[in-house]
Length: 123
Image 1 (cartoon, rainbow, N blue to C red):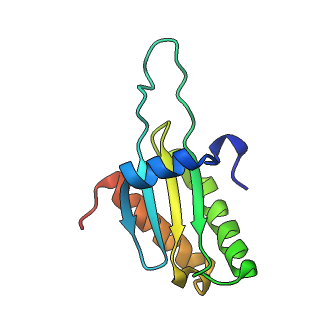
Image 2 (tube, one colour):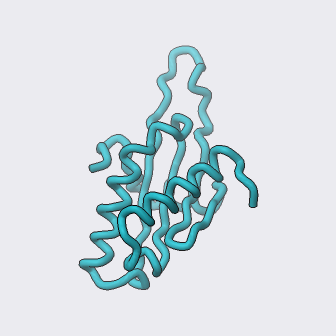
Image 3 (cartoon, rainbow, N blue to C red):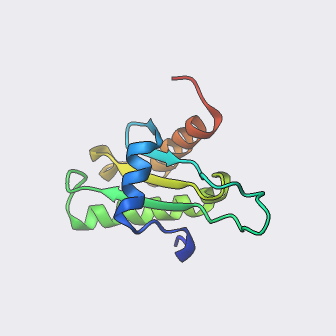
């Protein structure tokens, strides 16, 4: 489970990440990243944690399938949240193919999208 301080909950934060951030798409998901705007080395200020949120629409499948996809994505992001700069907003949007994908496929697609966003991979 993703820790409470790393969960993205407010609609404004989702909108900021999707509209003003960069994105990387894969066959089963799209990752939107808005890097942290605050300076983590500013005196007297602690760096805010990276927060992640998930969008899984009805196009993915029924309620059982959507919840399964959300649980898998939350589990995968728990281990990857530390690689993002402090204060980042991350939104993972599941595409219709994610309902049929297994855990390993979601992990590969998430890793590839994160690598592309953080490492500046080829387009």
